[in-house]
Image (tube, rainbow, N blue to C red; front, top):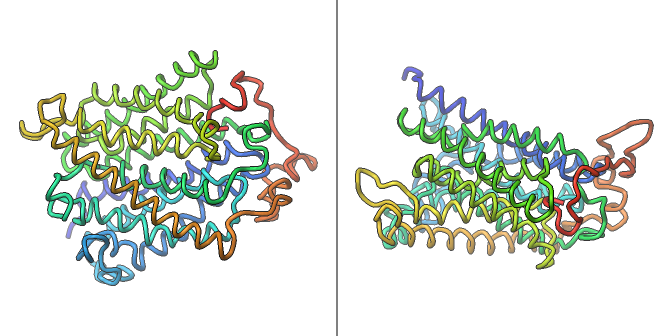
Length: 431
């Protein structure tokens, strides 16, 4: 079969999405302490390697094809992708792999500074196999939540174009569960060394994520008209979310911050992910604004509720993912003059479908991650020792340091100041 423009676009989109994981490494790496930056970045990079192997062998098969009880596909249906050789389906398999990679990598931000790298390397393939692939099958592969699935056929099919439930709610819930299992960092909420050590890295990472997100959202566009809407919405929502986050900081803390701008961009991208092909540009602006404000407020909840989500995966990805997914029940555009959200006269059907899909994603991810996380924690241990945490996980886990400036940086003594912001430690975003 000849290579068409559509095939090329999906391949380019897959490359864009793959670039997002190194972008995430910069985003997360800059938000950690200097003595944990390499470890944080390695958690993203190793996810590419581990998930790449799993996806080729059985992950792709589990996310589609003939289902088992509506929960997951047959792992051996396309084992090692042998039956895809010589078909255009191989392009879709590659595209799908990049989504699985970025999803599990997102979780790592919640356990920064204190997780064993070996435990993470075990968690990644197990979680992708038992959590990501089944949920992807339920939503996108014709499983329980699909139009003909046991749940979708009753309550209606939820809209999730690019991963509100499968990627962001899934990762956000898993991040919260792991943070609770592993426990708080030493000095959580009081030690100023937990502040981000390299804000330019964070902003570089946010830029790479935004760039790659046009492939993330637009890769599955079926027509030029749909692709144009997706592109504009992927610009509009994070732009509005950044503004919303900065306004919230200005009102609450007295100053907008660079970290807030970067975090707002990501919150808006998360919110528009499920909705990118189903809302108007005006709807995307409103969705972005709301998600930016709510995410900015949500990141402080960890201090009030007492869970240590190091880099605010819960506050950004779970909260903005919930906003973007549920909001479709209100602002989804009608299709061929029918359906749509409440604001378009579509009734409560779409809202009900969105809520049900959200609840299923939350419960499934929470239960399965709890089982996997506890199993690893009780056997090999998920957390480094207190001494290793004090000295820095870069040294204990990799025998490396991110910065060698005449010895500065060894043991985490290198800590760039952050005097540009007056945000108190207990209220700082992404602290």
